[in-house]
Picture 1: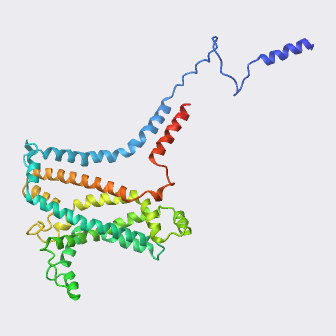
Picture 2: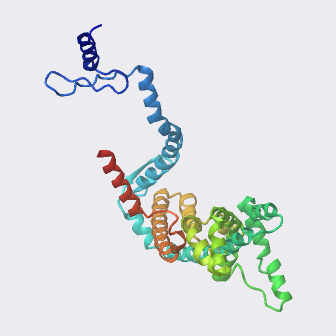
Length: 365
């Protein structure tokens, strides 16, 4: 082979387009890159994509379907009935507008029931949350038989409300009650639990606290155990005491759980029904409406007087009251419980939004 042949053969090798994974995309005669071929997805690939996108919604759909049937429909049905003079037997009524709401708001009995409801709610919810927090802190310590004490705290919640009402009704009897017997042992005269409004509210609130304190304590305990122990160790090294650790670490870290517990306690406290109904043998809120609550009054209007239009209107008034009190509780809890203990644990909402915008710009670039 001559040098000319060798040169020509080398030039032929060098002029050949490279092949393999590093090959450059072919260009059109005008110099622009050729368009990529359209990828056609098979039916199985499209089905896989649909499954990936729709399966989460299908998994959670049973709850929303059931809630729409047994939740949203009764709510909408009650809202319609509240504006009508409804006849439950004929299942028909005449539209009268806001007359049912005006009638309820002009009844002195409604305002007595509202006062009693708020009184029982305050006497039950505030001590209940304080005691639940204390029990949760004690159960979070290194004590023996933790499981036994935690189960003991939950046992009152398992007891039926009717049984609790019957037991406490006997305990707070005016003449032969166990509580008045204990007070007499200390030289205190008997208290008229079923006569005086305040003392009847205290007795009913004690039933509520008995049933729900342990339940809320276990919820707070679960949130406390999710707090990293490194924070407490670092605080101990820095010289922080038990109270300082609770105020600066435990309480701020429990903020979401506290909001949940306070709102649920508000809803349950304003809807209290079983305890006042079982406080005596009549279940009408006392001879002088000493412990008549809104739900008891609602029940008496609906099933005692068979006026379901007024009962529906009162249910919506109670819903608006609970909504307003819940929003107030949310604002107060957010302002009182600081976020100092949670700083550095997770970015704020503004920081997360800024990071998301920066990530989108980087992807677009």
